[in-house]
Length: 246
Image: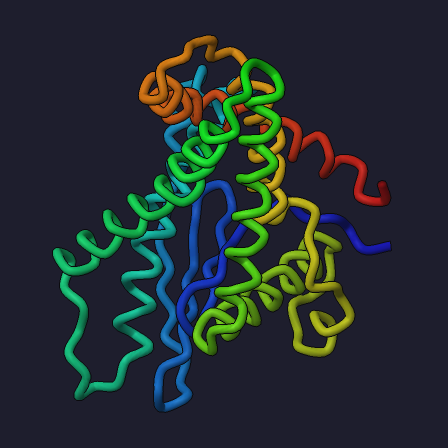
């Protein structure tokens, strides 16, 4: 029986994948000439230096922030590497502006819009938060379905599946070869999409703690409680990963 390896994580980037373990990352991007651009670097978590940040619930918040920062940098790198030599490269300022706009749209779409639509129903208490949560889940599912129709996003999803196959192969203790990787599924129990779905469900319970009639206090509370929700969701994701057959 093959010896199991330590857990690794990753994500799809433009025309490639990012892979990460506890201290290092590697980004592989397919260039227009079909050659693979590979970038490797050390990226130890701050939780290794500040012990309490590695405690349960704290580590989920730290992991979320680190992966967001790392993901943004990786997308910027992959965007430039996937372009032709004659194409104008994306500057850090342009990418920063794009990122801010994207995050603002995400907040508006998944927090502000559901809250506004729920307000129209004139419900209160648990029912209000339940309707708010259901609307958020519906918007999320519709969002995934719509963007999956886009050619570039569909390509990104393909790399996402390839990343899962590779992680599954590696964590099973098998040698990373094309033949071995093909045997494994494109789904993974620690997938970021699964994490987001857990966040959506947990948010319904946590947002119930915000007892006020003020629309903007409810909105601000939802923003401020995101780290708490992320911490709880991360622990549930890790717990579920211990029972892969369930």
